[in-house]
Amino acid sequence: MASFNYDKAFDELKTLLEEIQAPDTSLEDLSKKLKRAKELVKKCKAKLRQIEADVEQTLEEE
Image (spheres, rainbow, N blue to C red):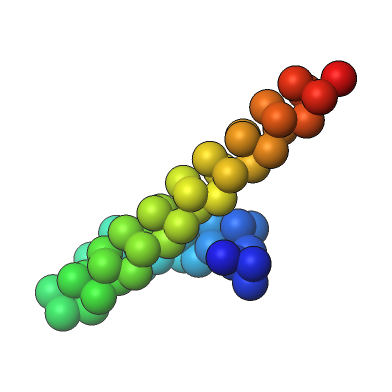
């Protein structure tokens, strides 16, 4: 996950949300966008858990 960029993923999620909410989004596109959004949410959650663990470890070392 070293190449994962949380900020870029979050920005992509915001864009996907706008596209999903657009009235002219086809069902096929909606399905693809939802799958991509699900992948990004999963990766973002994992990154946040990793950062939280790193912060907790750092605080315990003091």
